[in-house]
Length: 117
Ligand code: SF4
Ligand code: SF4
Image 1 (cartoon, rainbow, N blue to C red):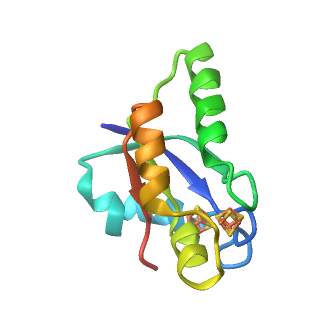
Image 2: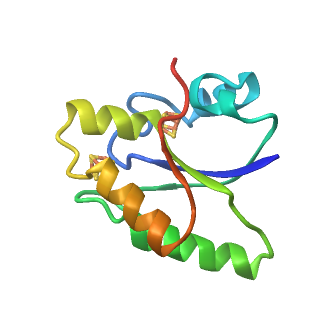
Image 3: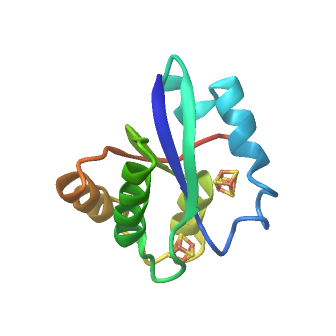
């Protein structure tokens, strides 16, 4: 069982997808980046903190809140919306830098992307 959190692009959410229906479907069908897990528990979803990207403090706050709730996450996925923002919308986040920051400081693996719809 992988306990995951999804971070979405604050600007694209509800424009490219609505109500995150694609990620919910992707989890159910183990589509694309979800295919690496036997089973998935979606623990949390939140946004990137808006431009220029405040993912590290968001994830830090998220882990603190989850600890108070006696919950944990095993892995963070940046939504396919964030990948699209990086590729096509001049998102200022550098995935490689962000991955190193989160993994070194908060000790949670980070995966780029979710579904492929
Ligand atoms: S890619 Fe996933 S997280 Fe991003 S807006 Fe679409 S459904 Fe939501
Ligand atoms: S473009 Fe990048 S930093 Fe801006 S809201 Fe989207 S994911 Fe966040």
